[in-house]
Image (tube, rainbow, N blue to C red; front, side):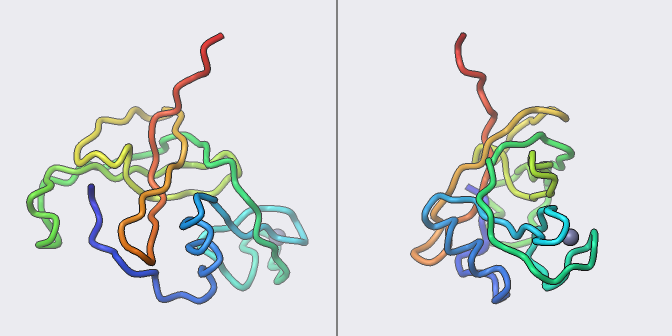
Length: 139
Ligand SMILES: [Zn+2]
């Protein structure tokens, strides 16, 4: 499991996102003026500059847009976990999320691969959002 972060990021604007992740819910801000989602949390919409937003539950589903496999340990705590893969997911709601795939140290995602969020409690106060391949329901 790749993680060097064990405490909640020090950004009060994003606190609702991290509090919901502990409960297994993926939240992002949604602009009350234009309806677009935004993440990380901001005080102003990048699309319409509106300042009013609500927290909305996301589907957690999206597509792998890009990925990178690291073979060098930039943090000593993960030296034993090399290589590991970081994915950039375009969520169906139109926001990008960077994380790992399946929580495995080394994964080989495909561009366009459908994925779904899952929640990884890495400490008592922090749950990270990770992604796993989305397997279609049998028909
Ligand atoms: Zn807006």
